[in-house]
Length: 215
Image 1: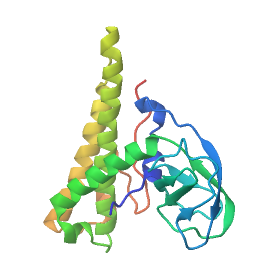
Image 2: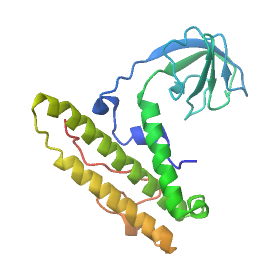
Image 3: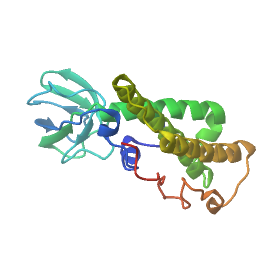
Image 4: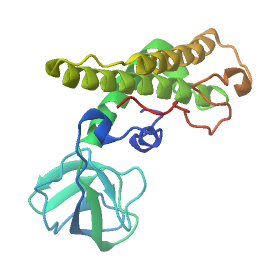
């Protein structure tokens, strides 16, 4: 399982517009039953897809739509924490887009570190693993942004300047590699030794991506 969530990647400043994606919201009503992931009596599932973020009273944080079962039923990734009939679902192609990148980079990192190291929950290794993974994810998001900008500019005869994004992507990957090399070598160093230009020191600090993004 990845060390990072869709929400904490979005919190880094990435938005649907940066990748040419729309993020429509559709509020539906449905019946929640405490302890069950199934939402019944859903008013409308036409714009709901697997991977959409699910929010509402009785829905735990970091919950997504696991499946759309029928016109009146969906299944969530977490059990409801309360019984109720109001649930807000964000129907968006953006969370699944990020989730795919998270899963890919998590698998690649696990392959490089090995399952035992990747699954280490002791500090400081657990923090280093999460930061390395976040750096790789952010770098891949930057690459997706570059591809989007270039793909839209070239057909119109434009020559986009993506040097800033390229530098950010390079810095993100370099700092991620620093964490990886320390983890692979088995060295244990205080987190302050990793306070570079992109990754911020401190066990709970998020990635600090320089602004503004191109575009």
